[in-house]
Image (cartoon, rainbow, N blue to C red):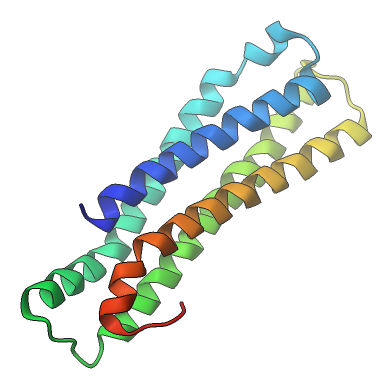
Length: 168
């Protein structure tokens, strides 16, 4: 199975797990009541899926050259001069896209949700709670990004061996 087909589901799953985890943490620190928790959860999930979809398209375009190189090397066994640079550059671009997805989703997204919830009166304005939620959002986003990048690194292991790349 290709790197793309194994990595894209992880991007979606990571985003959804992170979103649901963050919503669960927000239940304790912001919403306090289960009915307040459920309002807006559908829009959070839809926004997560939309963002993951956009990032998946971008990541797919970054990984396509890698897939071609891997297929060619498996068929011919020959490594061309620029293959290593193409793979390393594409890997870095995918990592950057993952980080951008998580910054947009977990930091900017959570900030917008909190501002709207406070503005609409869903949650009271308490600076300490809002700061804690932002810290949690940053931590959850960081953990998800690290997990996704670690998994991507595992997927690249065989290709790294073929290209004699020892670290990315």
